[in-house]
Length: 498
Ligand SMILES: [Zn+2]
Image (tube, rainbow, N blue to C red):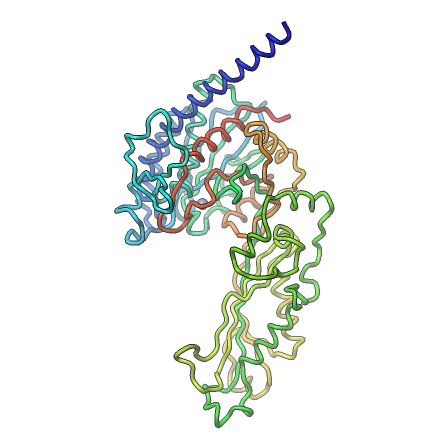
């Protein structure tokens, strides 16, 4: 009898998985049709009419699914907001995605129109165009949809809508209030967002924020990201003679700005890449539990160095993920005189280094810029933010002109936050796989100020393939990721908080 029950259970489980996958496949098919339709509407935020057409499409699609929608006016382009009817006894999730896409240069795409989605399969190294009619019941999850914003970020919006469809079909009561905010200027740095939070604070009120943008970890595994580094910049110029001078006549005599600059830069770091400027890493501690999570990310440091072709990594952290927990000090560009075929025998007049500083929550951007400036002053440089006058040149041996860029802050939600644990557990249970937890991503998202202004825990739950050519020609979305996205939204929206 016991065996029979077990057998019955196995049978039942198998049948339900089979049904599940049929239902999902038909929802995937529906999503593809809907995404093709959505991608057809150009979405370059430089063109306000494009954005309006997208808002009309969205309003229709969300209204049809029972959402109340509104267009939120801002100091620039409007935002899209949708919410299911509220129930005060339930916790509230706010989802963030964006409807705008990067500008396109159609000539660089392997298809006539980046807004006309093309279906492709991979044959060796070559992508072959497939007919949409061939997407029959047995959809090939390795095929891809090529078109602007298929991945970034219209795909996830469509996955969300189709997860809602499936929840309805299955009569699942959603144990949350669901709110959605869609940005129309993410690719143009989301400028109106932080102000909009102040204006629409009541509307956007939620217990936690889930951001569906960007790709999953390179391993392709389910991924949850808890933060992103911020950024600021410095431009640093040193000065030699007022005009470039003949190196025969004045070499050994006129001070060389290239040597001044490189000596200054060289002493900012030790030979293994650690910043030597006092206080630069202040406030950052990584306990053992945090290190365990960092180590659990399935990166291969060997593969990274092989791919980028360098022998030894810098030593700010002991491994890749650990290195990202610290602010960086990077020379992003360096110039003086002329180089290559155009090199001239001169003592140059100036030398310039462009620096970028990636920030973590412990390292305020203004504080770090001030530390760098203080260091330069301590090296005997006179500091100015404009071209030095003749008087200044005659009064100081070493002059540094420093121009400061604005600061975009980092954000990071605590790795131990219960809402994060909830999302990780839901993904683990759903996909029966380890979930990659990224404490902080190296790059910067323009919505950090928005997240910090909302003052609620935020988690990035990416939906799309890592090799999606985001922002580039031939942007694409792997069809299997649509199934992944629908199931992820479905799982989150059908599981009550513990
Ligand atoms: Zn995006």
